[in-house]
Amino acid sequence: MRRSWLIASTFFLGTLAATAADVNPGTVPEIPYDSVPHFFKLPPDLYLGEASGVAVNSKRHIFIFNRGNSTGPAYGATASQVLEFGPDGKFIREIGHNLYAWSFAHTVRVDKDDNLWAVDKGSDMVIKFDPEGRVDMVFGRKKEASDEGGPWTRVNPPRPAIEGQFRQPTDVTWDPEGNTFISDGYINSRVAKYDKNGNWVKSWGDRGTGPGQFNLPHSIAADATGNIYVADRENSRIQVFDHNGNFLKIIKIDIPAPPDARVWMGNAFTAQNPPAGSRIPGSPWALCITPGPGTQYLYSSDNYPGRVYKLTLDGKVVGMLGSTGRQIKQFGWIHEMACPSENEIYVAEILNWRVQKLILHPGNAR
Image 1 (cartoon, rainbow, N blue to C red):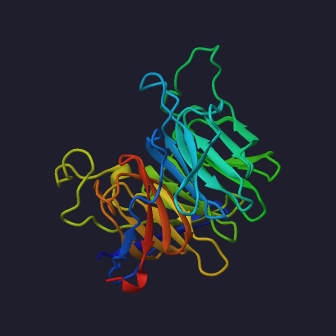
Image 2 (cartoon, rainbow, N blue to C red):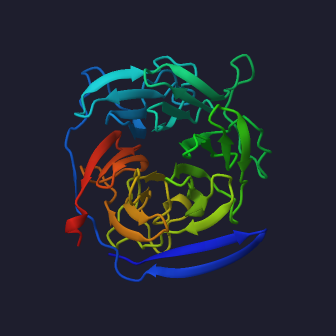
């Protein structure tokens, strides 16, 4: 039960007018929830690696993008695998087995037509599959094996971004017109826009801390009006734009960690060793927005203290749940979420190698 603040900024004609308002002066309720135990049924010879992505389609099939199927050394492995499960959690199939783009899984999403989109951070590629699981469109291009291999290096200042190419992309979303938005990502720090036919339109953003700048746009989601929400992770904020990339506002989740908060690895933070960057409480790692019509809610997860926050689309925190740990109903770095309804959420955890199905009970919030 903590306080939250929304920091909103409005940008007009190149002039920034910043305002800060305490829009939620009361305490933030803890939302009671259950985790469905042993929901996903894997075959005896199949295991999840780091579960980096999860998505749900209109038939309520669940797709998990995980860093499994590993071959080779720890660095330079093929660690990408899309697995499909039925509404009852039973395994159905693997999609894209031995796909050329597979390198290092990041996120997976499903669009309004049940097409599946996989974002591979290692190959710098985004792949669109049709509902039958066949490749429909390809975005980006990985480095050729005939050239000198190796990951993109990070230099300061960053190298200029190149149209149509990605450097460690992170996520994908769409507006109602079918335009595609890709967060790009660990190195380029921008958002790329394509039209519904896959044609490059534009990009916006670069490395920085100002409005419209990013320091690791890690997750991206769109509401029913086409506004784009970007988890600007290392800047510990969510930025909101219209579908043309015009800056609208900043949302910050400023709720202190409880005194007994734990970290998954290492020692707890202290006054002498405070959390920073992606580990600041409320710093967004994963975003999802509940579908319309009707009231939509934004869910955001953090690394520390390992919570999921429920927000209105204007940025008011109306509830929160969870903590870091290895037990059921605890979380180890939620990397992506799917929220097919307000009270049903799937969370993909990197460190715990699993996806949990959560059922929320906000009517019993305390």
